[in-house]
Length: 50
Image 1 (cartoon, rainbow, N blue to C red):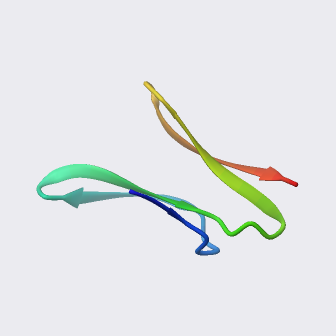
Image 2: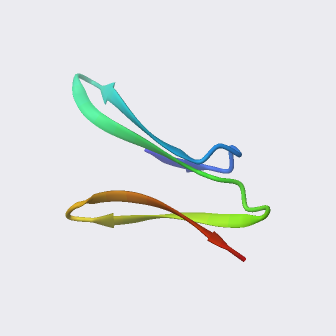
């Protein structure tokens, strides 16, 4: 699950329907932006300045 603009960017592990899952929270776009990078190795949360 990916959602955003909560002012608290983070990555969370959780269980959904008995399966391991991840929740990625993108930050609000005030002083910096945030994005995710998905590769076969995993998911990375990246912050960047404007």
